[in-house]
Image (cartoon, rainbow, N blue to C red; front, side, top):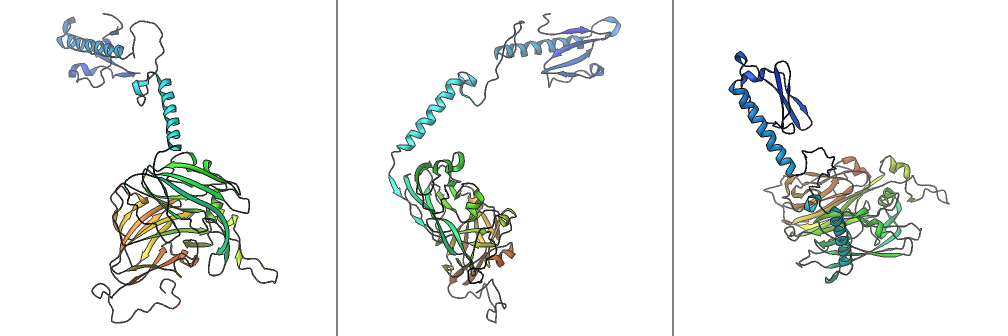
Length: 452
């Protein structure tokens, strides 16, 4: 028998038959009394007893030998067909095919070149995209642009300008915020999946600080930041195709990234799916973020200044001095959100961070639907009380307002209430005693910060 097909070697009372059968049928019990099998690479060596009665070969031994030889021959023929085994002694180099490459690895260099050519063509076509052009409707928090009703993609012109401005941060202190389009958070951008965002960014920050845009909806290195970095007085334009629906954070990513975010440079981009979420009565834009500042310093008159400055040590320790909604302590208390009884209210909620995770909660209400992590393709969660939103993350929640009154928006890491994380939603309408009733009028506790 050819040694390439089967290797037989004799011991005192055993032959070894080399075979590749891994799940072979069980041998007769008498034959299993031999020493255990050994595994060598892809070949399975089994020692099989050849002892017979009175020096003659038994029919079981012949059966095993025949089965093993046939299996080995079948495997070798199969392997030779696939180029993995040769029956001669020539040394050959064998390259494993790439299962993900076309033609199982054949002409791989050509395929790579073709891919690169396709990428170049894609970039060229994006630059000269033959789509209608539309100017994006940009809104300042808490307002949201109206739903997009068109059923086709467009080139969506989005203009953002980086500006630093001194604004009220808390009821006590002012702070120089770094803004997009003069607001913190930056404007809400609404688009549709398939749209090409034609982003124009201009830097009017007189401090000389460069700025850019990293948008979590832009697929590519840096989320667009390397293409959009602008120094003072510069303007740049870049295009990005929106491939994934959802609610995405955008922010400045110039180093140190945390400083730019901590000073107010963030916003939300909502990419509608082809089948958008069910319509609701009211839509609002809310972002949570925190600020880190040094203690106020005395002014020229010896009085404590009403302006505070950014604190690097506080930010490194993640020891937030201020936690707010929509950029200031008074944003949602002096100008509450509004709804009418039986309205369904949708909140597009984002967490700019830069450090703290939000436990978003509306006291007295329940989120009838929650699109967790702004996943608008999966079925929403239902009847959710509190939603965790990490820095750089977002969520979409729907609430049915069934009782009139004032509802308080909080981060349920509740001591952040003392740092400014509070807002109100006022619902107008007639009382609903069948749902909410007492013989006595409401009486908030003295010094209560949760209810006006």
